[in-house]
Length: 115
Length: 110
Image (cartoon, rainbow over all chains, first blue to last red; front, top):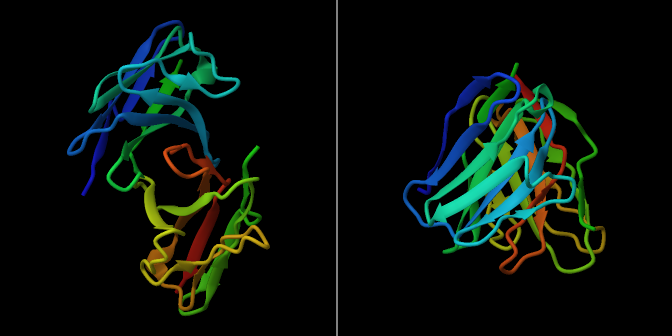
């Protein structure tokens, strides 16, 4: 099956620091990946579309300078939360699209806590 | 704008009872509809999509364009069906972006 991993699975950082989260498709290539944010007991909110070799496309209301996305290879996309603040604390989930049948496969998520 | 509505936050049934999780959508074109499931402490995974017309784990869902609905049904619920269920929509084709509903937490009691 198609597997998507995320690293780290959880991270605690101080306010003002930057945190990088990796999303990897382990056994397939993904030209398109997505980054979502999920608040406790709420649905997934799409933050941005990550396209290999080009700039990410951000959803309305998502600060591109705060949430930097880099999709440098067909199996890796990274999300960097810059100058993190407590309100950035959340569960961040990525997904990767397998073009064979256009199905999205989700990573296990990364729990970010900003102190 | 596209929107997915799941009117029930919580749904509780007894084992063996039928279950229906409601999903309504608004979209001007021809959308693709999906049901995703998230079991406790596990990642989100695809349960079924309307274009495949499959039955997965006994669940079925029919796209009703007239009522703009994509309700998920199972005739006999099992305890292992307890999970969070999300209905999602994409505009189809090469646009893979998904819009999720708020989810319904299904609890199947013994």
